[in-house]
Image 1: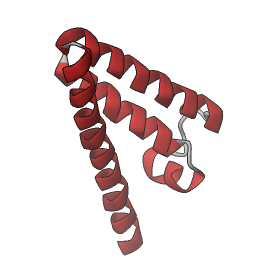
Image 2: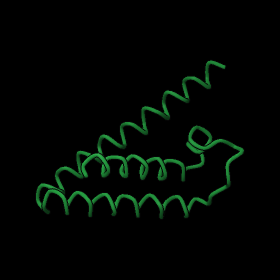
Image 3: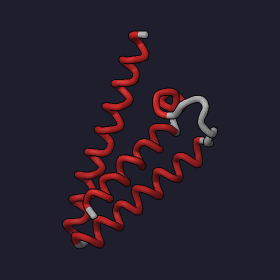
Length: 93
């Protein structure tokens, strides 16, 4: 359950980062289906909420919130590293 919750956090932060126009070009290909900013934001918040529920159900409320904060940190760092790597790669071209 912890791995699934971590995956949900990572996808949620990817969705929240893709809602920003300056990050969208690094995360979504131009040929993909256009999604509105609000749709991506709501999807991100929904996935974070589902991740919190999963963490609390599997570990209990007290430990679940602590694990969820850890998972959010790791998920946000993964998305930030991916974006910075793509920015550096596109700057070289």
